[in-house]
Image 1 (tube, rainbow, N blue to C red):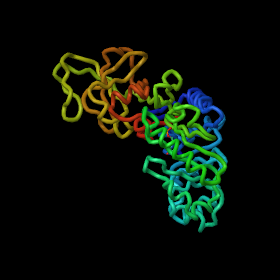
Image 2 (cartoon, rainbow, N blue to C red):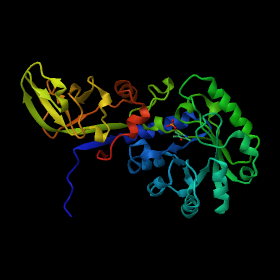
Image 3 (tube, rainbow, N blue to C red):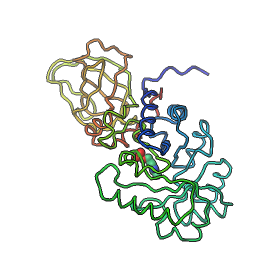
Image 4 (tube, rainbow, N blue to C red):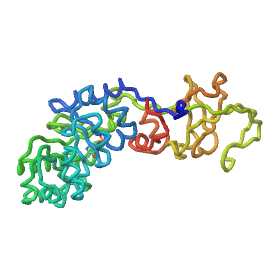
Length: 347
Ligand SMILES: *Cc1c(COP(=O)(O)O)cnc(C)c1O
């Protein structure tokens, strides 16, 4: 087989920053232990790229969303450390949990039944304390189907942890009430933002996701959480255009002077959505390079006025400090991470 040349698209992962982020969140979790949400390919950064780093710096519990995510995760960590948040919807999924040893999170009376009918055993239980997304309602804690579960971790999920909201305290109160009616091994409530709400929210396990990967979920994380993901793309072509020349689909940009421009191998198929708008820029050795005209599926054209030294084959960087990138693009920090395409080589 012919050897594949290096990609013109890469996602540099700062592994030291990823490890430092986990340690900071683990420290802020107090006597609770920080796990790691690794669903959606570690929020788009890549399971194979991130999971060994998270494991080696000390994370011992890993949250997937789908059963389809489990095989890749099991290549790196023991099955009993993996919790599958969407739970067993069908007997086939319950059987898959039994076969692999990955632990299901039970989210409904139906799932409790499916799990028990498959033979039961250790599971986690998600209680809905106010987000109205996934989880059993507090009223169902007394249901025999729930009371008969073998619950390792009792969980709930905060709706507004990234805001100053009365909802947080209300959910905390409800969570503690539910805990009094059930038997379990441990408790877990806080996501990234929830950890910053204080030790009262941490319990036994915290479940950070976004902040591991560089997301600033709350002000408390400024200067604490570092950027992890750095998208980079090669310059495919330099070209000189004359005043009056127009660039790209629908000729949306018109040059007002003769100028040097460059074609970069990054487009919306890779996650660079058109929402970034006319103020978007790339970076090269400190120089800011405006994007010109419309972003296309696989390419975008940039102004090379401030980078006369940039050559075809050199890599430019998309500024991806998440709070600023979110302001620039009108996308959430979660979306910015999870939409990074598979053509970027994680490295
Ligand atoms: C995704 C998820 C997390 C992580 O949330 P972040 O806001 O990314 O830290 C934690 N718990 C559950 C149940 C989740 O679905």
